[in-house]
Image (cartoon, rainbow, N blue to C red; front, top):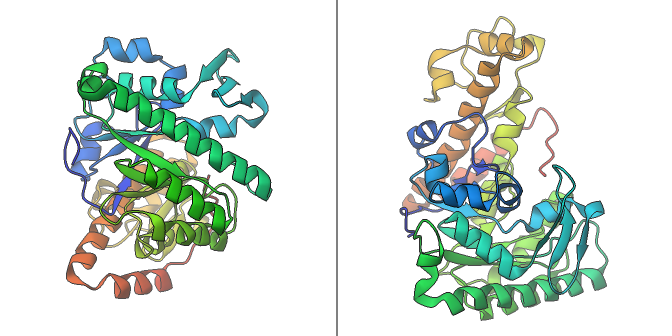
Length: 367
């Protein structure tokens, strides 16, 4: 339960990096039953800036979204600026990607920014290590993430009952801690135990889907899950393909976010139960079928594969919008179906059948 509503799990969170889920309006998100979206702290901090968002009364008002919002800490984006950043005990100094201006984010500042954004769920600042990663560095990084998590928790604790007032949107924020440890099982266990000891409102598994093989990613989750409380949300960050989501649900994960539905749509790729379809391919030029039979999204109700292919080849914006709407609907509907199957006690059979049928026609890289 959040200030702006209940989130049923397992849940997929469309990514609104810069205050918008790319090419989709809030009304369209509501119509496809999106329960929660993700806002990117780093990008919003850099542009338009916290003062602008505060002027509009917080992120919800600024983007006209009345549902729950999770704001990430910015750790992953800072991780991606490897050549432009310096990490110390105090925090991270970096050059932003827009104009190269120097900036600094500490655990305290990350909490202050997220409070100013007014999201429903804030994330503790962490250090995300690359793959591959040396054991000693992964261990030092996980310990740093724990020390930063303590500082993040201390900020919210010091605010106490005034925390909601500290946020311009008067939102009582939940705070999630992040488990690190790279691909090392013992480090994942140690990190999970240390983060859980701090008693957060929920727990995320970070540092996955950063280029490691899928089996390594699964092992990282399997090494962490036994040490996370069963009565609090578990968030697998940055995942993943449809089969990966179902496999993660089977391993006890509750929440997911991923750029694939919108990113691949912009390249003409659509998701379907049998795998991805590259609608740029000539085989679809005369295809009168919808992207997927029996899909109830706007694209499938009203348009053919052949027409959508034409739009993509002609570089018409409507083409990428239609595929985006379909892909997000596909992901959100998959989570709805998973919830139904879990309630009926048939999730395992559903998962196995879906994964067996699903075949990715084109290589997918999750970033």
